[in-house]
Length: 104
Image (cartoon, rainbow, N blue to C red; front, top):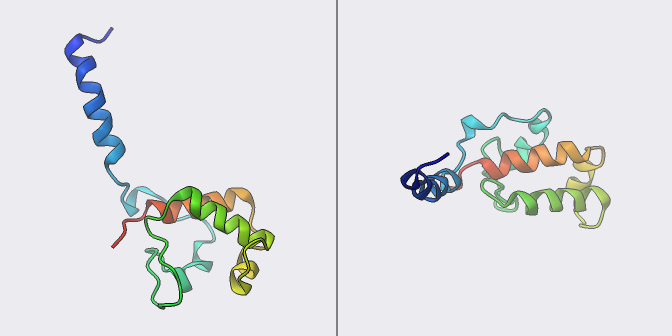
């Protein structure tokens, strides 16, 4: 059983853990990320002004956009081509990876 002082410290300790961003070293690059890197970079920072940065983006947003590209719901010729054979697990892994990267 936790002491009253320990119980009082839990919310503060939890807030520190939750607010601490994951570093790129803590998240393993998913298999297949090399297909994304030429445009979006391994670090999630695009080199072309026409390509969006993905680093630090919301994981749910990234997953939903990847799914929309795959199904054709969101129109983009290159992204449709790149995502057409990806599984839901692969989409999740890519979204989690890019979401975990630090923003610039």
